[in-house]
Amino acid sequence: MTANDQEFQDKPEEPVVVRDRRKVDPETGELRAQEAETDLAQEVAADAAGEGLAGPSGVATSGAEQDAAADVERQLAERTADLQRLQAEYANYRKRVDRDREAVIASTKASLVGELLPLIDDIERAESHGDLTGAFKAVADKLLATLQQAGLEAFGQEGEPFDPSVHEAVQHSTSPDVQGPTVSAVLRRGYRMGDRVVRAAMVAVTDSESVTPEPPADVAGDGDVTEQVSTPSGEQEQS
Image 1 (cartoon, rainbow, N blue to C red):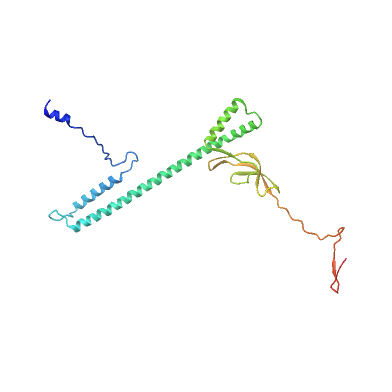
Image 2: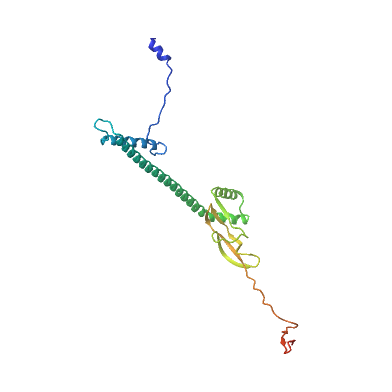
């Protein structure tokens, strides 16, 4: 083993440093702002040098250097503003796409659940008649649990105020016992998913009836009307 080999073995290994010099971010697919600004500054400086900003001796005057620097800064500011505007537009575009996708998903789920509501009505009728037993009950419970996990919620109860946005009134009556339009009977339950009403509740509505006050009557005895007659002396006589 030679002295050079011994020196090479004794020399510690330098750590390997890997620098990512890619101008495009592999995760977002966007141009890195620092790389774009550096390239722009280099291009503008090269153009300025090629246009003869330097004097005959190759040394630029101070005024020309200041003008070139100001022009570079101006163009750099413009390109930076353009890049920031593009990034903001792209961010807004992604938000709009995500919002539209969520709306389509919610609409599709509501449409599918709407097709299953008649089946849910049959299950409720079978349960009210005592026919929901055995394996049929187990399947029905799993179906209802799955729909509830998906966000399906039933509404419509007797005694709650009538709301035309979620209630469908098919019967109407009046009563002095209520203060305003009130649900007196639920003929078919309604369902919603989040803020979207899948089906309005079919209800009977009872409204308050106005009580007409009886007019006062001046009646005395057996129905004879008391008449007061004024005499010339100012005294009143009853007839």
